[in-house]
Length: 203
Image (cartoon, rainbow, N blue to C red; front, side):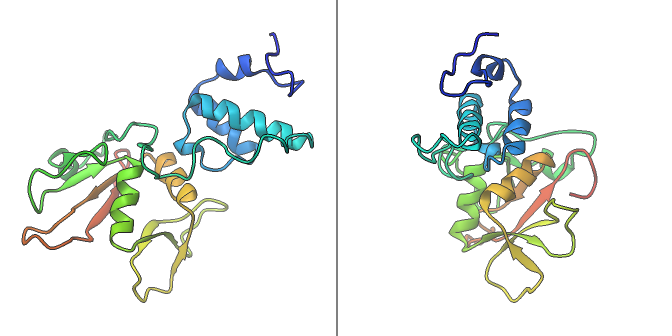
């Protein structure tokens, strides 16, 4: 296979582009690239190439931009473009919820049950309420995050703050859906949310 990357001998972007996005994400993670869940194919190829250059000690001229930015920034709808994930354990709550795929969409009415996989929607919802991405300490599995939560500034001592990249990497790896409300029926802001897996009863 022809190597189209003269700055990275031993690495072919042609071969990388023939890989699936999932395989590229795994390769990028193995190379130490963060925030892979928000990257598109070309961004993954660029990030892998840059990581390869840095490993060889000659990648300092290109800067540190991986092209994807931090997960959950505007424009990041996630690998499923914000659409819901369904499976054998899909709940009635999810089926009756309004699907939201981007920041441009609004609830049909106050108190409406909503659902999404869009990173930008989840992050905006949490940050509007002062939420910080977190995991429940003691529920980790080796190097993997445990139960995903948001810290809204309460007194819970068993929440450990994590980065948005880590939070969304885990959210996508577990193929979760984000069920939530923007407002209660009385019009007041709601902090209700639930994470649900379509493939098992407990997320």
